[in-house]
Length: 66
Length: 260
Image (cartoon, rainbow over all chains, first blue to last red; front, side, top):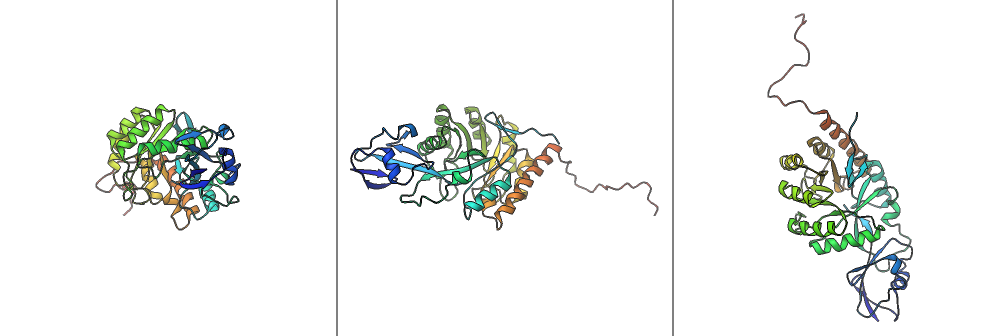
């Protein structure tokens, strides 16, 4: 299935969770926050949150800024 | 000397200098400059993680740890209330529920002046959602008052455009804002060098927030040290109360007892 992650289309296996996506992106253990279709996904829900076709995911982190 | 500390949303801070983390050469310089500045509140931006990013690169929060500093996520690059609110919600999740944010909703890229209408809208939504909002705004005393009345925990007027280093362009407006202040007033943007920071504090502001003035100096770490001293000196001068200005000279040495 195709999912939009940070503005790019990613091909993922069916029944992929946020947790799997984070692992696939090498972001395990990193301080990130996830938004799925404009809603925040709490860390505690990464495992049980399944992605579906055309979902829009934003994964953000902290960077330098003023 | 006894001086009260700055209190923001019920928390006391020893340093009246707040600093950003943008525009530094690398993470080492960022960490060093911020440590030397003595700042306790440190701003950062929220952005997409790069796809395929090198997992070994240090992240900002490894260098500027939330255990050591009060982290203040900003909404830089947001031009609408909706984008700013989204950014704050992501930031709160990123920081495990920490809800102090720096709200800035910008008007255009050239001036980076605030879009005050969108700022008011975003502030209202965020406050209702439980955020503690420190708000970047214009130096308009009426808007500053409205933002405070609305429940913002600090009002942060600009002294000159963000990143311009032009100094305190309208000290009279800043004074007017201070006259009616019910929450901490922190000048955010415009400072170029140490004397500008001292002027902000001498005006009676509660604090000053800067990034480029330190990061874009030839020697950022040395400038961070200069800013720390300038903020302290300016604050002490404000508390001491300056002498009145006079048109003509007034000799410091007595006239009596001269032998010529």
